[in-house]
Image 1 (cartoon, one colour):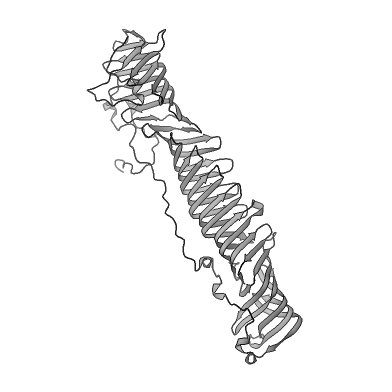
Image 2: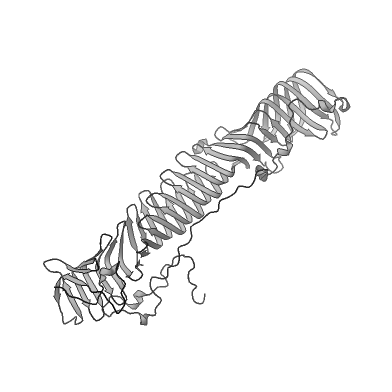
Length: 571
């Protein structure tokens, strides 16, 4: 039997036509046993019969329940027992109990509530729905399951038109590959896009992402993070103003103010663009890239236009390409060590640093050049051990009257406590040396050719020279050696290139142009779910299970962080 009424049943829980108070759509009750009970004088009661559940149709929406109480005067419906409401193929809601107020177009469901749409399923114990706003809300805990993950939170709000969930407080996403924890998360069910606000983490077996503003594609496993963002791998931590993360490729890239910390090797790499490939144990960094390693209580800085670090933690290899520079400040009282070359190679396991193509190295006041320069460190003590210069080795030290110079095919220098104290130059060696007495008075200029030469240094100054198989040479009075004979063939003074500070690593190089980080804005303020109405003014039928307090915002309800939130009264 078909009966018309002024109600807009729970059927409109999700998608209904907005009606004015004067023009209500009628519902069509197509099945159910009708009875009138004296104890419920204002209700028409429909109960399931042998043909099935109570079945109600309205504007393309269908509802089934075991029993429905229809209150004609108050335009109010209560549904009991295996309640199911569907909207075409898109939305379905199940619960043990549901009620709908046709005057306010407000619905409430309780008891194992399950809301299903094509991509997600929401489970909670109580759910409110405002048909005018097309928004649903829970505040006693809920679980949303999508195609890839399970999301839980204390409070949740669903925006039907944009297919967006807003989760607040104790938000957690559990995926077979990772777990997300946040205090505020906006989730779009159609795309799987999750926006993180406030301190948030994404934890997996191989990495931990932290940010205070971020985006994560829960289905594609890629993300973009800003505001104090970092990615922790097993032995590296990547920081940057913005970080892109691709779990499928074990890849992360960072832009602006980057740091890559190597906790095992006590090193950090800085720059303004970096790429990290976890499975390949590879880091690529550019835009004022500099690697800083702590050795024997001192720091070693390596800079190049591009730095690439590869290898497992116990076998890290650093390569610097184009306009490479090296700087070691030294401990208090020590002279710095610095160098320049086209490319640089550092093997930490072997304790070797190679300066390649047009290299120059300064150890205190000593300038050394050659085709290739190697610096070797003691792998146990981390102290400098040996210096090797291959082919066209040339050592120059500035004197007040000229330049002390030694050249040959190969140079081998020995260090004690990181200070160069012995230099051996072999094969076709030549020397020009300004000899001075104990009062630092010039007594002559030594110009000698030998098969090899050994030099002794103290506090970076030459204190003695030993000639092996001396071929030809003598000490000239200063007036007897003309100016044009005081420079050996191939002499080149590059003192103006010497580095005296960390800032000199970038001397002569323009500051990089940094891209503007777009960032992720806070969500727009969309108002409170419940209107700010005094309890005595809330329209609520006497038959409802709810009280006016249930339809008010509570002080302990979590509030989202949004753009342009209202200013509290008195604030």
